[in-house]
Structures are given as structure tokens and as C-alpha cells.
Picture 1 (cartoon, helix red, strand yellow):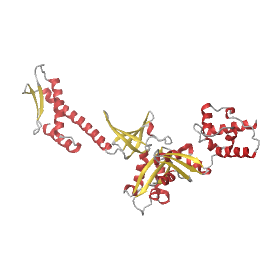
Picture 2: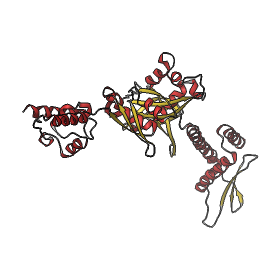
Picture 3: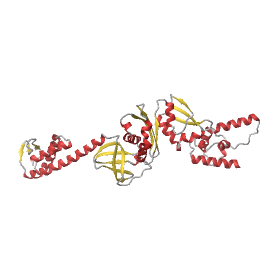
Length: 395
């Protein structure tokens, strides 16, 4: 047993990276606990167990006098074995923790193992288990047990069960790392990712620039016939990706960020980092995007507050027409007040007036897209307001 024990401890030191002295001290502590159960010790007596570092022999001392106990000799081997097994498990947990802690910020692969209260437990190739929390899952993704999955390592924590690996599929850097894996020019540092803005499952805007004049940053990311970006879109289950060319000129950068809309004019306030972006009427919906997504992502990408305006707002045109009628002496038709609109609350009414809509005629001369620019009015509410305005006009 003695030489066998030392051989096991030597092997553990080599394979698991645990110092032999730490293992010996752990074995001695465990053996001392076992000795107290089989050796009668009075309160004023001291009991000590020592493992000889050279021979591996286990010696027991009571008040510094070596004693011999057959019962203790029989249980010493099994106790030492249990301690070693425990230490091996602890060492393996530490190895897993150290390995994945060094991989925070990287992408890992695994398979869906089980589902737990909305969270997904992922088997990371048999080495450990990762947790894809519900809040870190894309709303448009649905996984099945046994399905292969890739995820971004957000954090690694240590608990009583070992390493707790927190994963994400919604983190902006998930897309960034996929580009690094898919585009050699990014991995080699020729093309740099300057910024990224993402709404998981919907759309991502990524700004890139090239450090080599001969390499087109956008072309490198798109790939031949769009193969590179298509692979990433497939990995993200159809999430739309806009690749934007970064520019030190903030005006040009804003124009690129708001693509595919065409920008007519940009009025800037550099101190407040705000910009009023003017577009033609037919470009307004493109610039704003569905539910304001395009302008919202562009704003986050460039780090500026962007306000989209049209060249000739409908309200301004209406006012011009009214002024022309007055100058020509044309009798103005009776107008219907906004207060007469049914189903419009006080807050919405105030926002409409603030935006320049004073009468029913103003509403009728505007489009649904114009109304959605007013705070608190979405597409459905805009359609309802226009419908009510037409009813009032017909009366």
C-alpha cells in the first residue's frame, strides 16, 4: 500500500497539476479523522497521523508516541483511496474552470442536452455543461434535444458543482466572433471591426474598415457571391446583417449607417452628438425602418442621436396652402378641430398638436408614415386616426 500510494500521488501531480505536498496533507487530514473513530483518545491526549514522504508508510502518534492499531491499518487504505478520488474530481473541476475561463469571449460548440425552466443546458463535447439562459436566447430560434449548437461564452463562475458556464446567442459579439471565424482578413487583422449594433433575431449592423488599401473591407466580409455573410446569416437563423463601411468623416459614416436609405442633407450638433438627417419623402420609410429599427441601430452604431426628417413635411405644405388662400382672399372652409376626433386620448392629442397637426385637414393631408413620426403613434394607431378623420370629414 505504501509505495502504491506514493506512485498514485506522483501520477496525480503529473496529470492533474496538483502539488504532491498538497495531496499528502489532504491524505494525512483524512487519515487523522478516520483514526479518531477507531482509536480511543482522551480529551487531554493529542493524536497525529503522518505519511512518510519517502517510504509511504503511515504512522500514528498519540502524544508524540507511535502506536499500532490493526483496526486503523485496515481502514487506512480505503480512506486514502477516497481522498484521492475526491481530489481527482476537484482537480478535474479546476481544470474545466481554468480552460473555459480562458475562453470567455469566444464561441464554443455543443449539443442541446436538456431544457430547464426556459433555460437550455448544453453538453460542451463531454467536457462540461453550459447554460444558455432564456434572456440570452434569440426569440426567433427554437432548438431540439440533441441538436448541434454554437454559442458565445459570456462568463464562467465557480460553484460547489464546478464550473458554471454562461452562454449567449444574443450578444453582439456573437456575430463579431462569427465574422472573425468566417473572414480570414478579419482574423489576420487586415480588416477591422470598428463597431457593432444588434437586435437579436432581427437585424445587425456591423462597421468595418481596411488597413490595406488593396483590400475592400465590405467585399471581404461579403465574400464571393455573398458566401461568407450568407454562412453567418444561416448560423443566426436568417437574421439580417448590414455591413457598413466605417469612415472617419462622421457625415459619411452616418450616411453609410442609414443604408439602404439615400440621405439628402445632414445638420450636425457636434457638442451634443446629435444629427438631423433630411431625406426625400420616398426615402423616409427606408431611413426609419420597420418599427424604427434602421435608425435605432444606425444611431447605436455611430454613437450619435439621429433624427430623421423629410424635406417638405405635410404640415408645412398645409400651412403654405392656407396662407396662399388667405392672401388670395379665398374664403376658408370651416375646419374640424382635432378635439372632435373619437378614440384619441389627451396625450396623443397633445403630441399631434406638438408635431404641427392642428386640424382634421392636417391629418387628411398627411400619410400614415408621417403620423408614425409622432411620439406614441404606431402603424395601427395611425391608420385608426386617419380612418376617424375621414369619417369626420364626410359628415
